Amino acid sequence: MIAVACDHGGYVLKKEILKHLEERGLEYKDFGCDSEEAVDYPIYARKVTTAIKSGECDRGILICGTGIGISIAANKVKGIRAALCTDCFTAEATRQHNDANILALGGRVVGPGLALKIVDTFLDTPFSNAERHKRRIDLIEQE
Image (tube, rainbow, N blue to C red; front, side, top):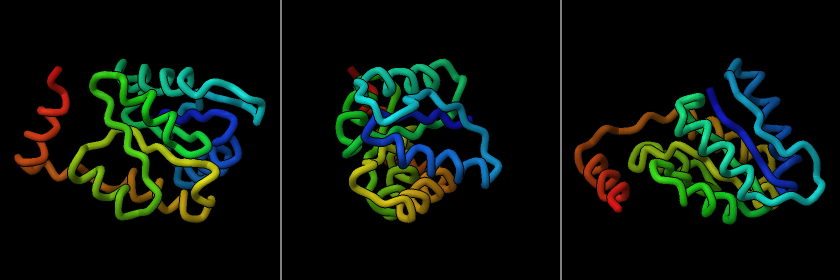
């Protein structure tokens, strides 16, 4: 199950992504927001991180205007590795090397065509399980 949420700056792109996930037959849960009316992105980041931490969802997609604010908010939560990606290479690398569990996108940065390719790359790329990457993730998780 994929947790998806956005703020007002990511609403239009979120609609495209949800349609794409449906076309792929992938299960998702939409945690809002539901319009282009201004909202606070940390609220929506928290909804997705909570769903992942609880096990309700395996991965997440967060979208705000730039992807920066919402990824910063998500990364405040222990066990969350949110990666802001603007191309397919970074989406692939963050899954292989960082085992990122949330993809962050900028609705005002990437267009829908590229965004959907980034989403597919992120969702379809497995973690490498290489020892060096596991070690680095363990170091990230230390307080």
